[in-house]
Image (tube, rainbow, N blue to C red; front, side, top):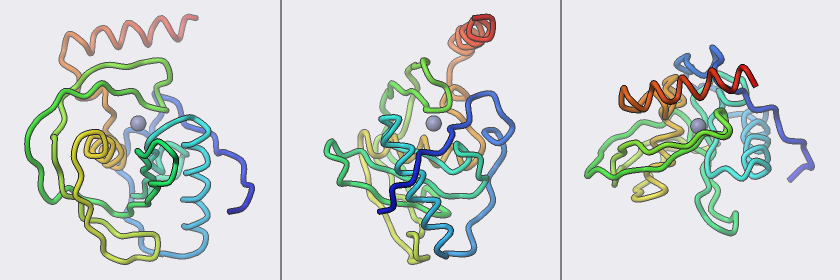
Length: 168
Ligand code: ZN
């Protein structure tokens, strides 16, 4: 892989993070270069997933790697959740909201239909951390952040945290 530098991560709040992203139509070299650079950005930030809007590109593309050795990377383009089952609490953070973590509910098992970086149809069956990560990144492509899933009370706490952050 080329020695590309990490991209800048867009920090909340920003319009691109709350805008539904456009479908990917061209599965070309520039797309694959973007995905590779997103991966570099994700690893540099110790993330397990990153979505294109987080690097200010509003397309339906994300990188996932929940492995411990960094060998489990894959790319999902135009993903959709085809099936889901169960519910589990999920303690989450987001590279676009550094320093904030909270617990929300996610589906425990999911099936995602998507395309890979060459446009080939793929299906991912996932559970636990991988299922949570996929839901988090697919949410990003719909302009949804994990804090949007917080209860009203927790949302108030988040707003207070944001206010404090902006004053710091
Ligand atoms: Zn995120």
